[in-house]
Length: 208
Image 1 (spheres, helix red, strand yellow):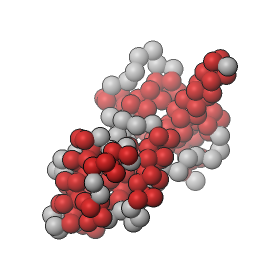
Image 2 (cartoon, rainbow, N blue to C red):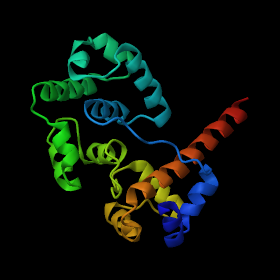
Image 3 (cartoon, rainbow, N blue to C red):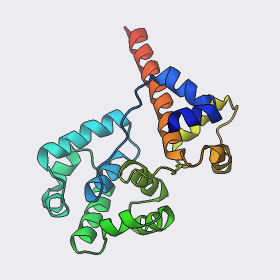
Image 4 (cartoon, one colour):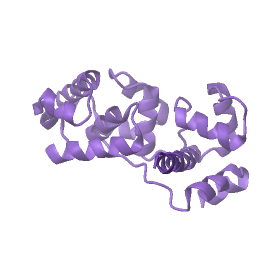
């Protein structure tokens, strides 16, 4: 198994499972337009808050289609957690997909870098968002999102580094983990989220 392979390469992944538990959270996202909308919604939000807001959107629009999304008014989208900027981004992508200007099936057939280039041509989709889409919606096995803050902080803690690693350090540390870097990222997130949840629980206890 690739988890065992990673543990054999680097003991930090055994630590990820020790701290986070054996059941790694599901980071999957829907493919196509719904996946892009969800990733835009999640930008700069915690996983728990983003999931709550996504479920709120699904209660108003399921399935999430370009035409259906464009029919929702601003008040409805704001109630689902979209800022004015995110509303603009998501509507722009909806119009592009609806008009045929973006072929999501073609992106699915592309290699990683061409797919990232096609996605980042969209306003509101940077490299981080494109990489998350490839990992979580297309299940690409070897994507390593070095611009993700939780990845940087997680690797810092797991490696015991005094300072947060920069992009170059994160690229270098993950080289031995090829071709399973997407799984490595999920394990680092698993560890990071577990620690965050513990700290939040401890804070609640102290306030009592």
